[in-house]
Amino acid sequence: MPMYTLEQAFMEHELIVLRVIGEWWEMDLTGRDKLACAKVLADRFAALDLPTEIEYLPPEEGEAMQTLVAAGGRLPVATFSRQYGEVRQMGPGRLEREEPWYEPENVAEALWYRGFMFRGFDDTAEGVIEYYYLPDELMAQFGQGTAVPQVIKEAPMPMLAPLETPPQMETAVTNAIDDLTTLLAEAQRTGLQGEWRKTAVPLLMEADSARLSLLLTLAKEMGMLRQGDTGLRPARTAVSWLQESRESQLRALAEAWSGSNWNELRRVPGLICEGEGWQNDPLLARTALFDALPRDENWYIVADVIATIKETEPDFQRPDGNYDTWYIRDEASDQYLTGFVHWDDVEGRLLHYLLQAPMRWLGLVEVGYTAEDVAVYRLTARAVAWLENEPVRAQDVPVPLVVQADASILVPFNGDRYQRFQTARISEAEPYLAGKPYLYRLTPASLALAQEQGIAADRVLQFLEKGSGRPLPASVKRAIERWAQNGVEGRLETAVVLRVRDAAILDTLAHNPKTRDFIGERLGELAVAIRRDQWEQFREATAQLGLLLDVSVSGDQ
Image (cartoon, rainbow, N blue to C red; front, side, top):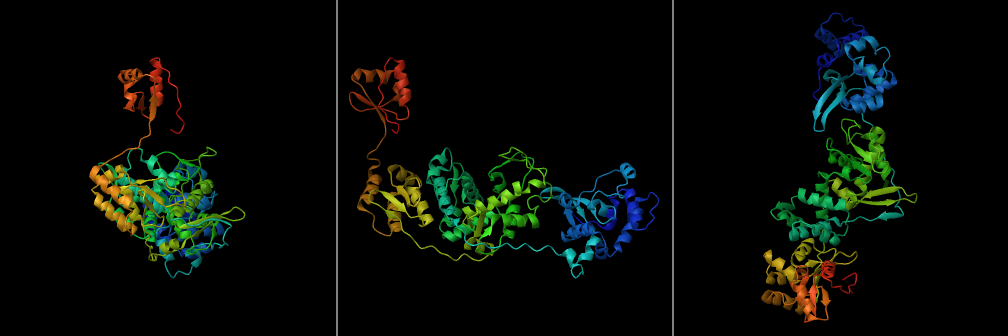
């Protein structure tokens, strides 16, 4: 909001209010010339020693003025009113009838009718915000060197008390980069289209849906995934990231998250955000939290950090100070959480979620509980280094692949992410098992897919030999070479087998329009394969033809 001069500020008042302010300062403002009255008052107030005047105000009024000055001369009406009340809006007729200056309802009205503060609007990124403010000439009196430190100094940040290591704790995790590597490999394979989650989620170390959403959002915002005709595919940026050290990769994710549009508020457990007519800026919450966190590796109580932010910067998420415009419902009580009274239910839970979810997922905090079951946290060394803008120092120790004689490939958890990404391009991934290396298998289908990507058999052999650092098992080398020469030489299939006593039954079923589409490969005169996923429909169709089939199919077949 552009600051107004005293004359401009007084012109926003009703003429009757100008006369009331004049009477307070022993000035007789008669006539109907509003501009003349505003000029006279502006001259009078320009000559005031406002710091001295504040000292002689009643304690609550003086405190309110100090708060306004400390905020740079303006505060959102909703924020100021929460502590000092709000000036009732009245037209000339009501002002004459009620004369509120004689019995102001609160501190705000008392200051308003003395001419000590004014009201204006500003069009901000968060929308139009209404402010109480001090005009330029009055704020100029509180520049550097003014002998009123109690007015211009902000309250110091409360000190948080460090704790001993809690009995229950979760050590820092760094597996976000491992799961993002898996997702990049899945994007290379499927473009993240269709039902890709059914195959990808079992490959992840953590399957939390919110965490998956965050990783995909960061990958897109970092330019690691690009949209193409065949879905989302890894870009060159992804290759560069995959080739970095683990700590560098984590630092890149933390940097991306700090400026990401991923909205934690709409994912806080227990909160239901409704409607599209309002929005919040996720960066504001992260910034408020980062500013409040002590830059050390001590343990602290989560609730103390939240209380500190509530005391020093409560409106971090709602710059207009208005707590009545967002549609947020509590899932347990089904009640809407409106008003500052629900700050802990919304802002408090959001801050708690930032610490317990994204910051933990990205290896920035460890979390735990005291013996009294109080939630605590501490920053990791990488988090402190990141917040202090210190360079990344830790480097990785190379760990080779292990190619086994049965055409399986083991990639250790601390193996090179780029090598694992390349491994996934030529083989099929097995579901992730905690505490075990990543397991991949070379199959004709995986080699064919690699060939479609321009990876020939000889390049597969070169990659595996280089990645493992030793000669390949003879069986694996021979299998890849035979596939390159002969293609698929055998196939294992799971099927349901129909056996009959009379070959004529099979001939009938193979030609009947109700059953012929279910019939697969003949396995002799008295047996035929039925598609595994259709045997129940096939049994129903044969029953309609008057043929009842005995079933000996186990539940896991």
